[in-house]
Image (cartoon, rainbow, N blue to C red; front, top):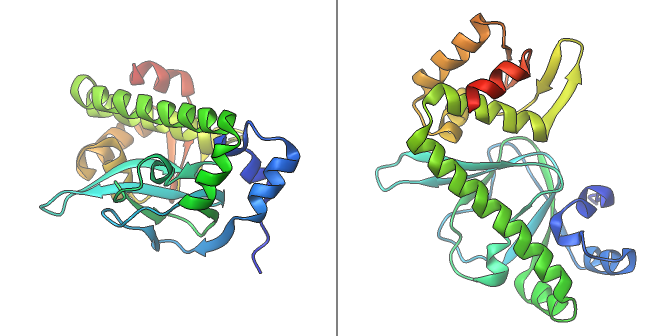
Amino acid sequence: MLVVDTEAVRRAPLFAALTDDDAEALLASMQSRTIHRGEELFHEGEKGESLYVITDGKVKLGRTSPDGRENLLAILGTGEMLGELSLFDPGPRTATATAVANTELVGLGHEAMADFLKTRPEVAMTMLGALARRLRRTNEALGDLVFTDVPGRVAKALIDLSQRFGQPVDDGVLVGHDLTQEELAQLVGASRETVNKALADFSARGWIKLEARAVTLLDVERLQRRAR
């Protein structure tokens, strides 16, 4: 039986407006699930019937173009939600969710969540706020694709990943992003070769130290300036 990390679930926006009793009641109706690295949670175009909260691990959200090219929309980690659009618009999934590390989640069906929200409108407002923040990030990313060069986008992605997944170490901030070089390039919206060139340049300048599926940020201030 999978043991659910209650504290991780409580960090999700879904639970932010709940009392302890309400949170426990909702958690009791959620189903636990484990997916391994490379395994899909759901696929773009499928009918969306559940939302999920990540209790451990990381999941990437991506889309595939008609000619087979992939674009990475987001990397989500512990305490973050995915699939919540199905609560407000139960149509096809707009992205494919794939584990980039062994991941544990709890899921809640559309009908159960809809019934829960009817008596707790404050939770619906909290969720709408979370959706608005995600839309704001999407709009910002679209602007970056138009107005920011690839090295700037790489620097910004590293800063964002460090703020969400980074851990302080002696020489800087260790970011265990669990992404391949190709996935990192998809997240930035550029070719792997161009992104690798930017990373190599940052490394040569002493701003970062590259690791296997991770990077240590040695000079966060310089990266922040390059990201602007």
